[in-house]
Length: 163
Image (cartoon, rainbow, N blue to C red):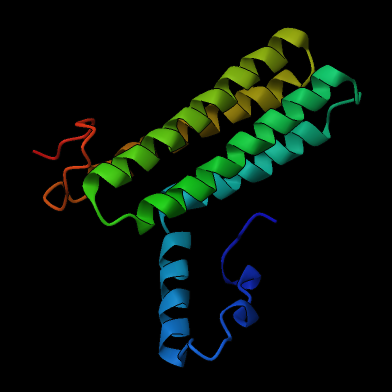
C-alpha cells in the first residue's frame, strides 16, 4: 500500500510494552511533517498519476506488464527514499538517498519515452506525466538545498563532502 499520511498509520505495530505514548506521538508528528513536505506531496501525486496511466494499458502482454511493473516500482521509490532521506542524520547519507530519488524520477521519464515510442499510453497522459516530473524536479532541488551541510561525517567513500 502506498502511504498517504496518517490514515495508513497503524498504532498496533508500535503498541508493545516498550512504546510509550510520547514515542508514538513523536512518530506521528514526524510522519505528519514528512507527509507535508512539498516534494512528498508531489511524489504522492506522481504515484497516483503513474498508477492511473498503467491502468489504461489496453493489453496485458509482456511489454505492457514490464512497463507497469518498472514504473510502479520507480514511483514507489520516490516516496520510500524521501522518507529515508528525511530520516538520515548526516548530509552525506541524505545525499545518497536523494540521488536514488533522482534516479527513480529519471527512470520514470525513460519509461515514459518508451511508452510513447511503443504507443502503449495516451500521449496526453504522458505529457502530463512529463510536466509533473518537472514540477517534482524543481521541488526536489529546493528540498536538497535545505539539507544541513554542516552536519556530516566521513563515510570512507569520499563521495559527498559537505565542505
